[in-house]
Length: 281
Length: 345
Image (tube, each protein chain N blue to C red):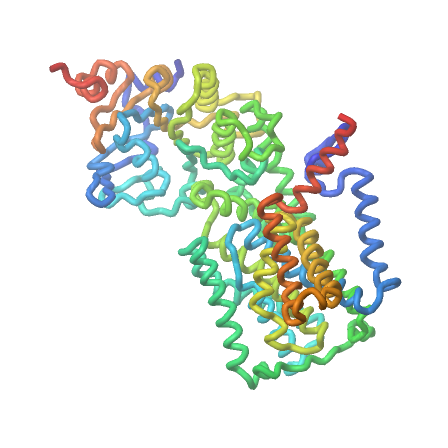
C-alpha cells in the first residue's frame, strides 16, 4: 500500500515519535488503562482496536492531554508530555478529532478551520480591534491555507454555512479539516467512520490515506497537504477498514494491551480472536 | 453574511470585507446622516434619550463579547460600569485630569477589575459563574460606599466638565456628538475583535471549551481577555454616563441594569454586533413608551402600580422573544433580507 508499510513490516529502522511508557489510568475503582506501553513510529498509520470499553479513547485522551494518567509517562519527540496542558500539546504538533464530533457549532465551516490556525497567528486582540495592517494581513494569509484544506476535503459548498446545521458526514469532514489546519506532526483520529455507511467510510478512508501520503504539487504552498502527516493513530471499530489502512495494530482489552503487530499478525493472534469472538466452549 | 446574487469576491481581502455592495454603503451613509443630524431636529428629551442609548450600546458591546460570544454570563456589568464611572470622577475631580485622558484610563481600570473578578471563571461555569458576577457587583458597590473620602459614599460626587478641544462638553449637543463618535468607534472595534483571531477563540470557548483547548486555545488567557475587553467597554460607558450627569452616584448604576443589558442581548440576538444596537434601542424605546402611556392608564390602574409598567413592558418583550424569536432581531432581519433578495421566488 504505502512505502511506510513495507519498511514497517520488514524492519526496525523507524524512529519513535510518541513513546507511551507503562501508563495506568483509573476512575475510582475502574481501571481504564493498566500498564499500557506503546510506541508510535515515524511513517506509519497505527490503529488501536478493541471491544467497547477497552480503553482506546482513554489512551487517546491521555496522549492529547485530556486525562492525566496516575502512573507512567508519555514522551513526544523525547519530551515528557504526560502532564502538559492540551493547548500546549496542540502547539507542539498533536492534533485530534473526536468520536462524538466536537465542533464550534456557532461558527461557519470556514471559521471552524480558521479557528485552528489560532496557534500560528501572532495578532493580539488589540491588533484585531485595529484590524487594518497586521491583523488583516494575517487573516488573508491563513485564509489561503484554510481554502486549500476546504478544497482538499471537497467541502467548498458549505464554506459559509454554520456547522451546527450540517449533516453528520460533513461535520466529520469539517472536524478532520480543523485537525489538519493545526499542521500536526501526529494526527489522532477517534473513530472517524463511526455511524457511516459504506460509501462515506470509503470517502473517509481515502481522505486518511491522502493525508498520510501527501498530495505533493497539488497543494504546493500548504506543507501539511503537500508532505502529508506521516504519523497517524486511528481508533476504529470497522475491522475491514483497519486491516486495509493500518500499518500496525495495537489491541486493547479491559485496559490492557493484548497484542501489537502487523495486520497479518493480529488477524492470526489467538488471544485477539478470543477477545473478539469468545473462546470455544 | 448572505450577499445578493452576482456579488463576487476576487480575493480574500474582498471576501472578508464588511461593506460589500452599493446598498451596504447607502444604508451605512443614511444611518450615519440620521444619527449625526438628530440634534438638528430633536427635542431635549429625545436628545437625552439618544445619548443614553449611545452610552448603553457601548456597554452592551462589552457584555456581548463577554456573554454573547465567550459564553460567560455576567450580571456584574453594571458594577464594572460603576468602576469606570468612579475612576473618571476621581481622576477628573481629584487628580484634575482632562476628560479625554480620564476616559481611557476609566476603561483600563474597569478592565483590570474585570480580570480580577473574572478569575473564578477559570474554575466555574454557568450558574455558579453568574452568582460570582452578582457577588462582584455587590462587592464593588460596597467598596464605593466604604471609601467615602474617595468616592463621596452615598452622597456621590460632582464631576467638573472640562473643555474638549475648546468646546464645553457641558453642552448636551456637543456631548451627544462625542458619545456618538465613540459609539461608532466601539461598534467597529467590537466587530473587528469578533471577526479576527480573538473573536474566533471566544466563540470556540463558548461552543466547546474542551475542543478549543485541544485546538490550541489557552483557556486561561482567553477567558480573562474576554473579561478584560468586556469590562473596558463597560468602564468607558460608565465614565461617559458619569460625565453626562456631571455627577457620580451609586444609584446611577443599579444592579438591575445588568439584567436589562442581558435582556437587550436576548432581544437583539446573542453574539451579534448589530443585534446589540437593535436590542438596546428596542428596550430603551419600550421603557420610554411605558413612561409615556403610564399616565393615560391612571384611571385603569393604581397610580403606584403604573410605575411598574416600565418594568413589565420590556420584560414581557424579552419573554416573547425567548419563546418566538430566541435568536433575536438580528436573525429576524437576516431572514427578511434573505426573503426579499430571493423575491419573487
